[in-house]
Amino acid sequence: MQPTGASLFENELLDTQPVLVAEQKSTYNEIDPAFPTNDLDKSLCAYLMDAVAFQPSLRLHFYLDFLLLVMQTERCRTLLPSEDRSKLTRAIKSLPDELTSSSGGKPPWRLMVSCLIANRSLDLSDNRLTTGGGFDEVRKTLPKTSKSLRKLVVKATQRAAELLAMDTSASESDQKAANDIKTQRMELIVKQG
Image (cartoon, rainbow, N blue to C red; front, side, top):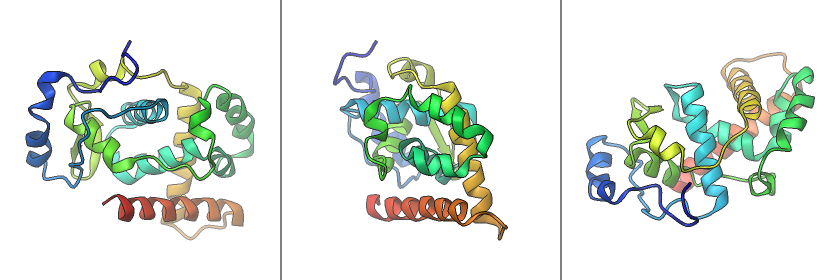
């Protein structure tokens, strides 16, 4: 288990991080060797890594939307079919309080992705994330995540993508939830770089 406050980076990786990020010609080059420094960031890294392992090679914005919905469970609930909403209520009980303490919670997206690429736990190619060679080593240092919650949030994220991709006869609340996630995604992308 990783000691509190310990970095996701091994000492030998620190020397190679800037080169790795530069070689990928990525805008994700904000590296903080001490990241993640708190339980919230550790949980977010764990959920992001597990989402990439569960649904690899999706566009970056899918994973950002996923994290926004992990942190904003009421919005997630709106996007789920009614038969899944009680499952979400049960799954939320396993979440650390810091993940859902703010319904408008937003992850440190650019820093998180940059660090996870730099320590080789994730790979970025053509704006898509996959697991990297250091995935297993880094993942074991992070907290466990709820498999049922991950599946439900992926379903809600896919629903949001469907609503944004086409003009549907979706309910007003579903459409609003999807549009809110898109707006927050765009704000984070502009704000963080």
